[in-house]
Amino acid sequence: MNQTITFVFTIIFLLESFWEVRLFSQLQALAIQNPTRIPPRFAKVIRLERRWNWISWILIILLFLTSSNFTILWVSLITLIETYVVWRMDNMKSKMTSKD
Image (tube, rainbow, N blue to C red; front, side):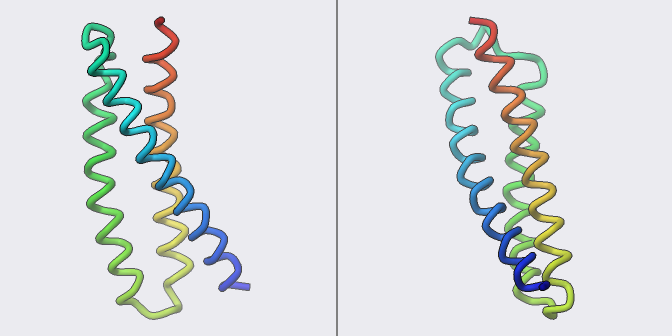
């Protein structure tokens, strides 16, 4: 059962990671196209994404170094934080595109 949950969370994390990269490039393109419409929280969201990018790599490395008893915990934590970061980026994109 733990292996199934870990597998599902890993797939979710990978899908969200691809979505995160896509959102990041869309946000950068929107900011370049019209720099006057950048919301005040834009820099904060981008900074959060960049920090999370580094922290997620550290957590993934820890995932491989720790015992298998903690695998589900690490994968759940990584997926939860990834979901939050993607949610924040998606909200920022919605705010930037709704002003058109």
